Image (cartoon, rainbow, N blue to C red; front, top):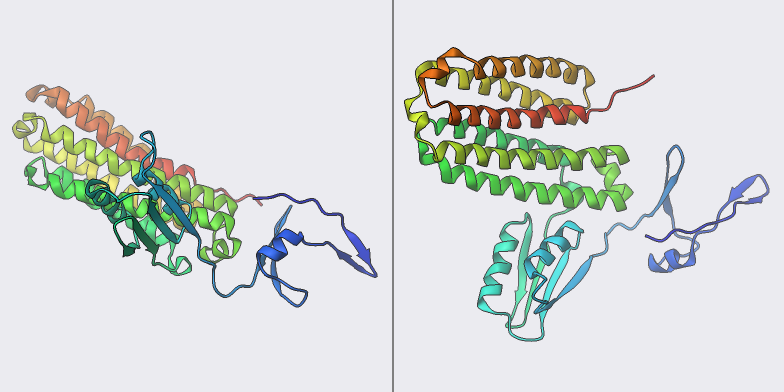
Length: 327
């Protein structure tokens, strides 16, 4: 991004400002071209009215230095909004690196290999960004996490669901990368931000919310590991199971309302959900000091409660992002 300074000029009753020649030439504009002007409180945005977005291309040399990674470069290019990613080799791309490249492509939404030979692999992003809804992506991430959380507690009685939880965490990561790409694109493309109905502050908040939900998925994986590595949960009584499931049911309600409040920027719903959050914290505290815990192996149970509380905190953190309205 380049910053230019211009002096306002008065011609008749109009105030005029010239546009940088470099920007005019780069966007192939002429005196008859039209541009869109979006005004904000302390600044304005000028964008071209090009009907077709130019394709952003990047070439990644191969092989890279030992300190660098071709997979990290692919992910970085994807997140920066490149539409065409080409890995260009001075030598034949090894079978191992080729498989790693393919695996990295599978971990990213809507990017496919369109051309390949011994020294070159070309991949293209095939999704029209303007047709995607960041709100729906965020809700999908939350929905996947919610399903994981419910199922992982089912592992207390059936440990066969471990692989399913890990697979769905990978899907949260895929959606997270897509959302980060869209958010970054919206920062530099005001028309895209307008299509998404996101202001500058909204874009920042969505980036934070996406990161919170992605971390929530990792927390669930931690809960999975806690349950899988301990046999203590096999001795849990029905009352202990019930206390955990009652907490989980409350978290499910808080999670749904938190994400709904964030997406709709509903401050009233956020306030009522915060009250539910406070009541749940008390319930978790009461469960933690329950006298009945003497009947079981207490340390794994307390570890599980702490991880569940950490997961619940994700949704209170989402609530903190909801902007108050001042009149």
